[in-house]
Length: 383
Image (cartoon, rainbow, N blue to C red):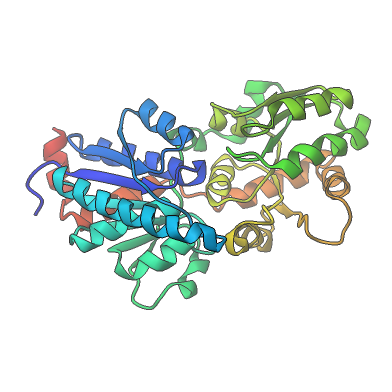
């Protein structure tokens, strides 16, 4: 049994979809085992470093490179990732790490492989219906894979220790999960409707370019609706200018800090279909039009969206289809939903059924099992 307070390292590539579940689990584990030391290891992205610092955890930058897309990138891929592996082995030994949690993405691979080589327990978080390359590669040697979608089972090798926990979300979503829908309406006013457009932390260029023209074509049908558009980094000014040219009143921001509050007060969302975004939509019970990122690895966003669509929990637009321009497709879907409150309510109820409010606790419990820390010991330490 682990005698000293554990040191847990969370390793991932720094995108919001990978980082936020890790932060949620770290907070939950620290709540259960208060003397735990938490460290995040990643590739040094600014968003990641800022979020980790704000949460009060240590951050380490590990050398890494994604899978090369050309022969010219192959040498750096080998050298940087080997350097990351060696740096991780040294860090795990010198800092007496007890466990590594892989959050997904290429920068998780070196640290998880180093942990396996040192015989440390490892947990992988998989947010999507199609597992990422890092998960597929690392799963056979990992102690456990905590998954959000049952659809990943046949895509992993036999013998993988797989547990379906749901995708951990930020604590604010857990708190607001229990607020009845009628209370949310009362808080913002019964005559105001909100349309929220989400492109993810990195932005979605096609949504930024196509949503404003679609709203312009709707014209008076949007009367009484408030538009909030999150553009992602680097797209704020161009999207603001497009709304201005089309004479549409909208609140346009690069990032939404209080996403749980905003999403829970929203009547309709237009969004990409990353696993963490879907988990947050489910917790909020938000009616949604999902527009999966067409270049996502292994088309995993479309698979995520189709799982929900099969349960009639969302509407899906494939921007690669021959159904017309994206703004015209958006107009067709928005016409159906803007004017039909009962349809929006049904979609919200159906997607709410996909919520896993206890996901962070489930993952933390799995971690304690692997560390051989029964609940009684945790309670004694907390006291």
